[in-house]
Length: 544
Image 1 (tube, rainbow, N blue to C red):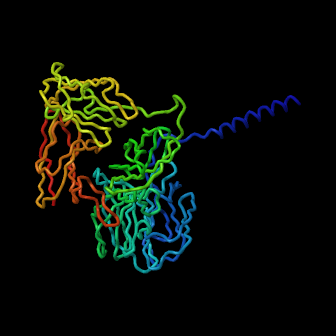
Image 2: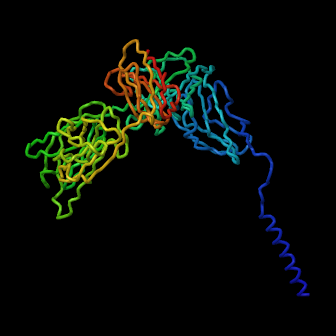
Image 3: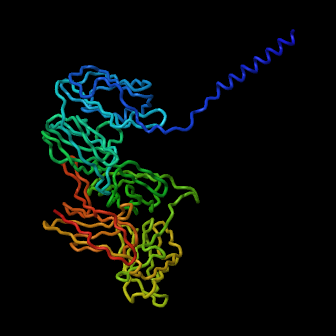
């Protein structure tokens, strides 16, 4: 009897185990069509286009389970809210509860962009937009346009285009827009359900999403004219650029036993240092776009040196300041670390040369104290040596760059340049190493030419630039009506014309305080594909 019970219990245990295993193995169904349908709204409170709404809660429900993706970033509400809202996630939608009532007699527009997606295939519920009014009228005017980067002519995505109710004290650094909308991937924006009125329009990259213009971090675009909106305003073109005008300042001063580095907020074009005590005078140079270096050539340690520094920044503004410098204590033997000394040449080794002007540019990482031109050898076709004299060279102010233009018999095939050790000696007694480079004479058949004509009836100042695919300037011509870019390597290029309104030889990005837009830039209509030994023409522009 006991044996029967044991057999029965074992049999039942086996049956239960099989049942549990079969229940645990849930297999997803296979086959069938992939779900490509986006979630569909089945209920929204208040209903779209509602009037006289006075609630503080909005519900939106779909026909399937949805996920909510970063609603705080995706959802745009115009006009701009005075308060905030909380989001309650529901299986098939969301509830928004606002802490303050909506303004009276105002039309509101909620654009959810890519907030809602279905749970399985992540299909986006696009074009989900709710419009309602707290009064008896729904505003219906529309403002639209496109935002571009003027330096590339490309559209910019996620720029906040804001409409501000006009006032004499309006400042996008301090005032948030009344209406706003972000641009799509094509740089296009559309602000709908706008009330008639008087507005200013600005476009801000708004990297911190606070709807305020942060001058140090963000770019801005301006619609110059105040808009009196009575009918729809379409096809606005807004160029967004860096208009930051914060004054230059010293960010950091770093010293070692050999050097003092002074870092600035803004890029430097020129620097001049006056030592208060003339006996303290030392060599200095600009080492980076925003930094200068003073060499402790007098070997002064632990004493304070007073200097007056004047720099011209990238906006051509002069910034002058007094500075105290104290080099660190004299290092022990073999402990004084010095910066590396290098030389770069242009053209580089192997690069071909143009017979119209055989010349070189040598750039050094430290100022040069001593040089011996007699040591430099220019050999034409290995047979003829061309001597370099003082009249052939031009140094920059800091003696960190020298340009050498070689006259004499032109080479037929190539030029070889030899610079032996000791030709150039730095202020820290570093020497250039042995250097040899060879340069074949340029063969025009390996290059192409691009040309065009400028029609300029009002005789405005301008310049034309040839750009590579990365929008880096390859060549530039100034105020030439029939221009030509010669000796251009095969590749893909763009051409842009810049109307230089103030004649300073560079593109100016505009000025928010003066309500000035960036200087006009015109582009060739398409990419230019240039092949070897080809001449492309007809890239014409009209300056109106």
